[in-house]
Image (cartoon, rainbow, N blue to C red; front, side, top):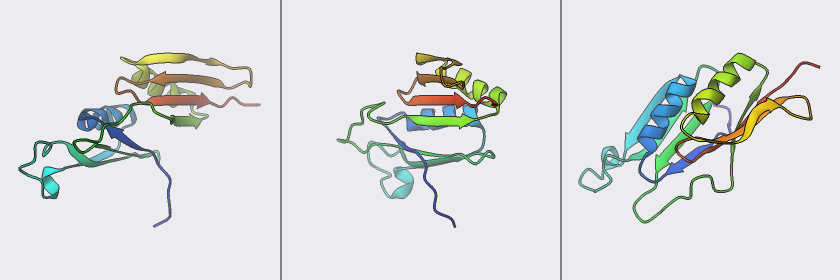
Amino acid sequence: MASRLNPYLNFNGDARQAMEFYKEVFGGTLALNSYGEFGQADAPNADKIMHGMLETAGGFTLMGADNPPGMESEPGGSYSVSLSGDDEAELRGYWEKLSEGGSVSVPLEQQMWGDVFGMCTDRFGVPWMVNISTAT
């Protein structure tokens, strides 16, 4: 197996909903494993996600989990998830779904470098950057 680099997102109890949302956005195969499945069946967080992984036909891999009790995460800390390419219809479709119910900090529009670019934070507090390359 080749090495790969992909985002791993942390959530404060809504990882299942977030990962199911990302499956709606990107499609693909979603695997979710709860804390209960890994030996913590009687714990208060047994139904929370210990590890989730979404793999898409387009080659995206997105992982996420709920933090264990006592470990809180700060949504949108010091990262953004970047989507880029030249398939305008596909990327605009992702943008529409990701920004719905969230907030837009930079509208998806032509920028001074020539590409169409935007920044939003989805309804789960995850920041996204979308860049649509334009032909030169």
